[in-house]
Image: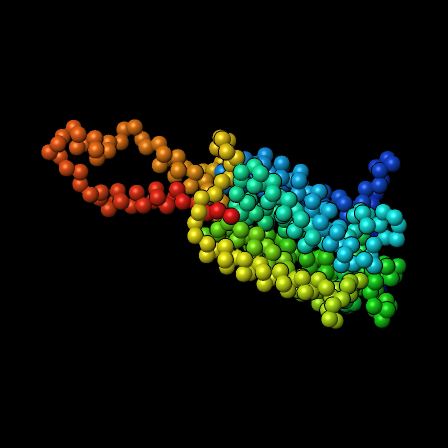
Length: 354
């Protein structure tokens, strides 16, 4: 697409490379994007988990289990749903560095392994799921930059000024319909997803600060929100995919998970409050619970309330002591202010579980 000298480009150019060398090591931008995204997710989750009153080092422990599980699950999903895109070499099914991780498979296996590990440590899963939900979206957004360098995850042909230029060999290898091969620029669906992921992550954090969110609720909205976006994305994608009843297979997955996520959110919000645990049995409380934000403060306040309820101040005089010292003095009913304090103590000692 031609444009005058000094004019702004009328499309997004494709990068000339997709990797670089450090000595004998070939570093792929796709892999680098996921490494940076995973690192950011760990840092974000550590901060949010600390605010809940949990030990941030637990996040590192969980990451050692869920990151490999996520990569394995993502690759398995990709191999099943897009078998034509598997490189035709003996190690093709494992070649994640060439691109090809199905996010739903990765999240599903990582969630199962993470839940198993948390249960083994005596930690309630629901609060941790809420803490990690926005972080997952940030990791996915950064990972989408790798799709740009791989010249993949693009949509239908377009003449929009932000259309993505795709070189002809990548159009062929991308498996797009033959009638679209003569077009040069396509919808940058990877960019749309990147923007949506960051916006949804910000919304989840905002919602947690401004609403009473119960365990699992933010994670359920993550499932519904991301899958809802994928319904749109599947309508503009033209790269290779398995089809069922005339629609891309991922369209059915996206619709199902959007409905499941919304129902899950409604059920999670309606569940009664129950006790939950953010620290392993016998572990000391960590600093920072007092600084918890509204979506994260429930547990921190509950821990503080429980400690207060179990260890009343020594300078407080009980009704029995008053009666014993002065038989003529009868303990009166608590004043409205005292009754409110008692009610508050009872409320703060009740926590929600996953």
